[in-house]
Length: 246
Image (cartoon, rainbow, N blue to C red; front, side, top):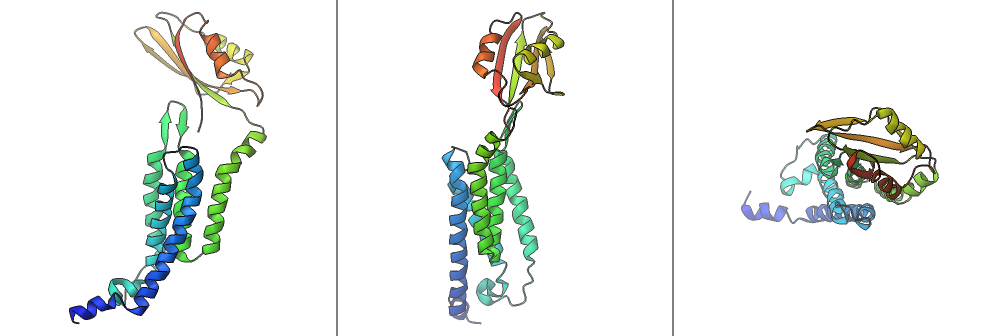
């Protein structure tokens, strides 16, 4: 086939129509990804609207092109065998690496889980658009946005117990007592979570790390009050308090 015929096959009417359909799918996936990413961007997360839009659109692109193998290379490939499920599997695996990159852990504090989960959901939205399930894709995007915006209010309404990650550093030679520590926590509306106590020692100075869980939703002294009391405790050389979020 002459070279000009090969080039013209890329701009045939059927090829342009197919490209137009793909572009419309990409535009829809981008819009839905931006919708989900807006909530993350509004709350100052590392992955915002651009990340979600790109993930959703790229997932859609990889899926939708798998549905038109007869148009690949200007229609020169007629007998291409494509398994869309393999494409979807590759997308999900790739997004797993991206999601792992936004999860951060510092001590007992884990952040980024919601962002990672919503990024994975954004890729699924793109896959749904690429497969032509437009109503399902719009529904999933709406459900994801509503879950991230309003489920926090539902969680605040439901019975819950907040947790505080505490690190206490003691003076040289001071030997803290675990029973006394648990009794002090209980008197302030907390209980030390089972299995959370970690003890370290360096140069005869002990450091205790543990998670204190409030007895109920309304109990538990605030961090400022706990900090003021820890300043007066005998044997405490330093401390760190933070909400144990996940």
